[in-house]
Length: 149
Image (cartoon, rainbow, N blue to C red):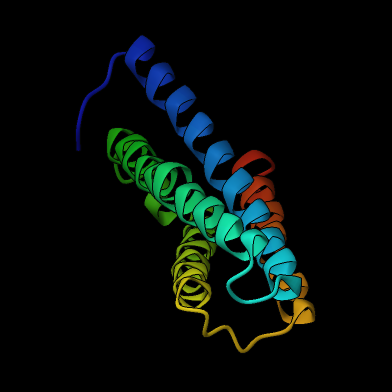
């Protein structure tokens, strides 16, 4: 357990919320870029531009935002002691965050396939894949705010 003053805790909480928002923005935008990339002809200017956009989005926004979301979230958990770890809503929230991290990893793999011009998936696949972060986000927010269980 770590100890944070009331003000320090609020700063960590604010940084956690900023990180989560940046992570989610990227997680919702990257599959959309994949949809556009499916239509781009291999080797075209559009395809090469999308590769740069996808790489930068993942490396400069999504990856750091995920890491900082985890760091600030776990810091708050550590500061709260054992109380939150036993709450069913927190367990559900953490499971959803793990699934969000898995989705993040899958998107990173898909980006590499596009980078190598080896994408085999359709626009429809990426449109459906775009729904996973949204559904997880809804559950995470409900668990964190409403704490229904």
